[in-house]
Length: 479
Image 1 (cartoon, one colour):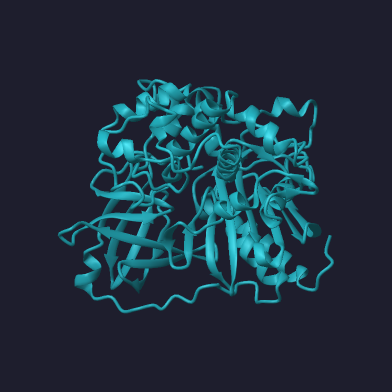
Image 2: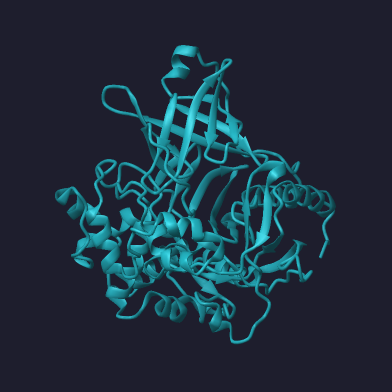
């Protein structure tokens, strides 16, 4: 469906991006004022079978699920059953961290904005362990985890968090670091307050009223629907990257609120109507207008003009407008949902390979649709000179207990960020301990964090705070 003058160049650009990353398939859909105006599929949902991708092809959506969890919390607040400013321990008295006093201060709002102070922890991998055991491509990981017990319930998750040795990143509300654990426990709060499983409550108050008939947590619920994307995994990088079908899906029962919903671009456009209309899908009210405004409020800064709301990223100066979006990445999944509220634009991108260039495709589609050059950037970062003495303050390895890691080195006058997969990126200094680097034609910002003595101790990159360390952990499992 190509009805706009910009679409040919956009489609050529996107296909090149997908070819470069060896992404098997993807689909983009854009709507204006609630009406579909453009969609295009690329590649296949199943390469081996040459199966075309449709508006109804079911993909995982990864962490796009997080905004659904927040919408469910707001639904409970609308009903007077909780307040986002309630302490978490009011509903989950079993929740504990190494700092008992700070734990009492952590609210639902802090969970929703990733500001509880929890560092990235390895609970996600433990929660997926049973799926790893059933996945023939994960047997090496299973062997590495043979001494680790799986986490199957909210209670086990809270016990696991309580057993970990870590320092909270700061007072609740002061430090942003993406936390799958916090979002998992939002599911527990929803279950505690509603008296229903999280998945059931979400279906009753959002999925069914919005007409999202192909959105499920378990593929068996689709009752014979075969329009389901094949999952793909990869190994190697660059020219050596090998992509292969890997049909065993992952599940993590206590983590479903953090990233395990499946959906279609058609259903996701219905969901985004809740935000465009301030609470309605058609004539059905899902949330109050006030709750929708709260979901999209820019609460905590991530980088320049980039904030986090409730399960959503908020870009406050996106070519003069507000861009609200969220991505998702896990096995066989790269997803993006987005809208520009004041312009009535909504969109969704789904792909069947983790870390496909969905954010870059989003920006190119919005640029094309709004008559800008495809690679136009919303923020013009002011690059600054960096002395060798200054640069060396950032050198070191940064890691999390979750398993993410990268190294900062200074070579031939250039500061480099190197990931575990050996990919390296040049960092450009933009002032105040902040840098940007370019990957898949998209600029990404990172920020270093100092202690009270002025020493660099952590870095905020990939939404997570990584601590300066000499230990490199195994790679994490995303969301």
